[in-house]
Figure 1 (cartoon, one colour):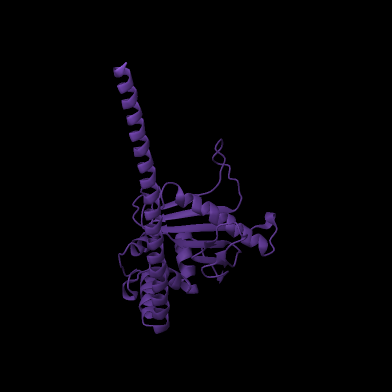
Figure 2: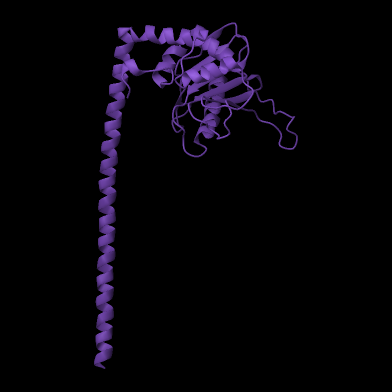
Length: 262
């Protein structure tokens, strides 16, 4: 865990705090999508979704709807999951968002346009693109979109390829740690400095950090116990195998002795 003073926009905790400022969240969306947004409404910051007892719950970093009823989920994804983990995560998030919208009273044929955005300080697909945009389309005719209203966007802060605006490149570089005089970058930096002077926010983060450390310690303890338990099982298994080997060797030796005796 970083100290409170070390946090940047790339850190999940600070990202959520800064994106809870409506003016900043709206401007970030406008820069990523190249659209004008009059207003946004927070459906719920870090929205917890758990539709049934058996399902796996998720927590959304930023969950907002604009004045045109398009729903956005924005995530800061610091670490790259193994294999197709990141792609499968967007699929699950999409299902949870749809379920949430339906639970709020929407009919399935009136589901909102949804855009899931992952900001990654790594290249999620290894093609060096600054931005990867995915929509469902027909493989036999790629000009034919499914028009299901679902879109997934992955931003690669270290990408160099693709036709993206200089403004977006500046923002991505900022997330990757490069400061500039860009108006949005400066606005975010000013807000981070302001947040860091608020004692209440510092205490909240320290409490969060302590809980995370406690969970980490508990996880390590459980891991050690599981390791010792597995080790004992392996030891017993190995011992049993050795005992069987000794018995088999004695049996063979006995047969050999009896044959020689004859």
